Amino acid sequence: MTGIANQTREYTLPEGCPVCEADLPVRVTARGPSAVCTHCGWMGRPFITVTHQGLRVSYDDGARA
Ligand SMILES: [Zn+2]
Image (cartoon, rainbow, N blue to C red; front, side):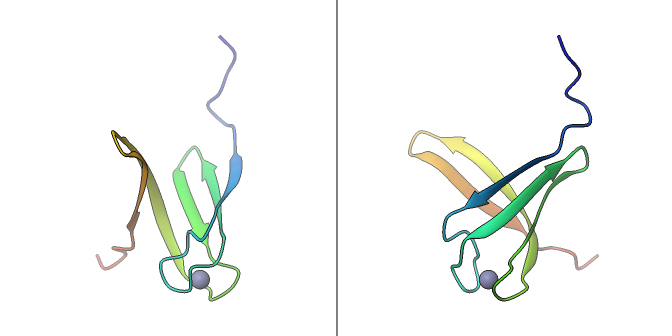
């Protein structure tokens, strides 16, 4: 096993922005995923869930603590 603890991954969700539907760049770090739309500036945390219908993306925009 090689260490995967501090890996940072970046990927793009096609039309992933819930606001403007632009491609959404996502960065996944040890702290979890975070996304910032370069088009409209929306920020959130996408969660990828695997369902029988395929991948489902949901967002935690609940920064309202
Ligand atoms: Zn956007």
